[in-house]
Image (cartoon, rainbow, N blue to C red; front, side, top):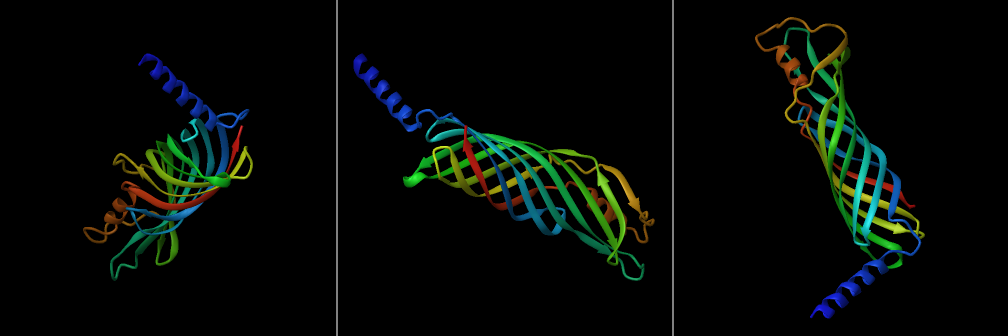
Length: 233
C-alpha cells in the first residue's frame, strides 16, 4: 500500500512537471486595455468606460495561476438634473471618476490545441478613486467641483481567451464584469470654482441637487471587453 501511494505521488508530480515548458519561467507579465458599458447609481447615463494597465501572473501549475492586476480606470457619466420652473435655474452635470486599482486572485487555465488557452479569474483589491464634476445651468458651465480621493473596493471576474504565438508570447482577449464598492462613503468636497449655488429658492431646490451630487459615487459596475499581450519571463 505504501509503495502504491509513493508511485501515485511520483506519477502525479511527473505529470504536473510535464505540463510546464522546459526552461521557461513560471512568471508572465503584460499590458492590457479595455472599454465597455458601465453604470453609476448617482447618474442617469454613462458616456464612457475605459481602462489600461498591466497584469502579472505566477503559474503554480499549467491549469492554475495566481494573478495581480494594476489598472487605471476612467468613467464618465451624466448627473441626474434638477430644475424648478420660473427660477431661471436648471442644473445638470457631468461626472468623471478616475482611479487606480490593484486586484489579486486565482486564475484557472485550460490549454487547448495549437497554442490556444482559455481561462477564468476572480480578483479583488483596493482602488483609490477621485471624482470631479462639471455642473451646468441651462446648458452653460456653472461650477466645477473637485472631491477628495476616497478608497474603494474593486473586484472583477474575467474570462480570457489567449493564443500563445510562441512559448513566450501570447495575444489575449478578455470579457468580464467589474464593480467597485465605496463602503457607503459620501464624497467630501475639496475645492470648487465658478459660481456659487443660490440659497434655496424652494424648500428643496437646489439643496436636494447638491446633496444628490455629493452622495456616494457608487455602486459602480461595468461589463467590459479588453485585449493585451502576455510575456513569459
